[in-house]
Image 1 (tube, one colour):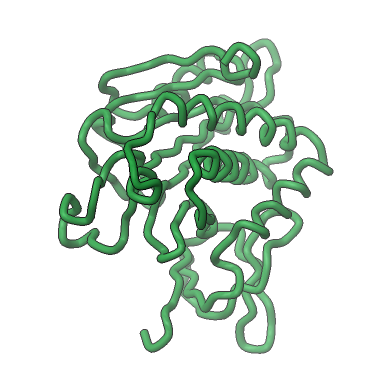
Image 2: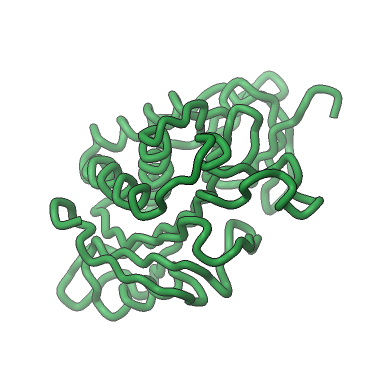
Length: 261
């Protein structure tokens, strides 16, 4: 992508983790914009240590190295930027009905998972010797051509996952989707650099967040609570109404609670 900051694309047939690779590169002083793409990850992971396995070459497994000059409390917006860019790229294929389940999943209208985003940083090695801003590595795994249909899914995932090709009704070119994603991310990454841009990211997240308006259970390190998600704060956090008050969720595992469950 020579027209964007994401010109340095490094490709791997197999790697343990594209996020791990870019974190190591960041510690060595790599500049913003390095991209790692893999056909297969042997130790790919999601939030809370979850894993996801798919046939090699079927899906888009990509991580990007960002160095936004923002406060530590706003670094989660790098995840927002990547999630929104992925929504933009998937919609460009003609697929509609894609939204974001706060904080880091892309889902279809039936709530089936289409992609997951994981951001990681290394505060201890906050900046390279040349004074670059601290790194944030954001990885995303998009179900592109697997599963082709629900018969390919293990029983525990039936009804819970979906692919772009299923929604599009035809196979999807992974390379074209990657380039579309990086082009969209260039526009979103620019917004990380200014207060107005970060507010715009939070506003776009609100517009595309399927969690808002639903009954949720929020699992935190020290317990859980239920309520109704009522909005997204200007900082990109989830606002939940519960017990006559509101709580702002900065980080947590959010489960959509279906009626009668």
